Amino acid sequence: MRKEALFRAVGNIRERCAADRFPIDSRELVMRACRNPEIEIIHFSDARIGGLLCREKNVTRVALNALHSGARRNFFCAHELIHYCLHGDRAKMWVCGDPSGGGVIAGADAYAEWQANAGAAELLMPYARVIPEFADALSVRRPFFREQHLRDMYESMARKYFVSGTVMEYRVNELIYETIQYVSGTPIEQVTLMSRREQSKRGVGRYSPLSVYDRIHNADTSAMNL
Ligand SMILES: [Zn+2]
Image (cartoon, rainbow, N blue to C red):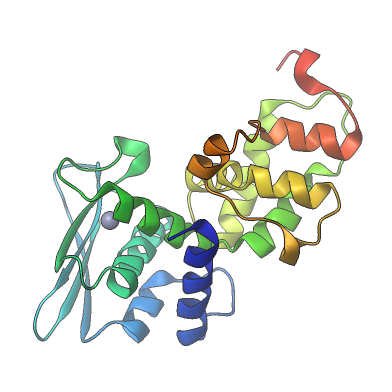
C-alpha cells in the first residue's frame, strides 16, 4: 500500500469514528471502532514496548505502557487501532516497539509496523493540517534561524495534537518532500505524497526543515552557525 492509499484508508477510519476535532484522543476511537474494547495501562518492564493489541473471540484488548507519558500513549493507542483496522487478517496479537526507543521488536512484521506508525501519525496529525501550520510557523523571518526555533515549533504543535515533541518532529520530517511542494505553490490537496523509500528509488533530493525555511524566504541557512 502506497503512502497515498494508506492516508486515504486512515481518512476513512477518522470519518467512520466521527473524529473531526483536534487533538484526537485515540482511546475514544478505539472504544468506537473496536469490537468489545478494553484498554489497560500496564507497567511493562521495558520502556521500548509501545503497546499491545490482542484480538480475542469476545474482546479486543489494547495495553499501553505506564512508563510513557499520556501524549506518547496517545500515539501508541492510535498505532494499535491502525493494526486493528488494517491488519486483521495478518495476526491476532501485536506487540509493538517504540520507534524512538529502539525500533521494531525482533520478529515483528516491519512493513506492518511502518504502516501502523505512518497511519497513526496521519490519524492524529493529518498532513493537510500539519503542512500548512508548519509552513506558517516558518514564515516568520529571523535574523538567525536556529535549531532551537525548530524544537520550540515541534513542542508547540505537539501540544496542539496531544503527541510528544519527538513524534511531532518525526512527523514534520516525514512530510518534508510534500512541504517543499506546498511552499513552492502547490495547493495542499494537490501535493504528491511519496514515502521515503519511493523518494530514494526515484532519486528525489533530500530536504530538511531548514530547506523549507530557505525556500520560503529565499535564504541560505546552511552557512549559519546552528
Ligand atoms: Zn505495531
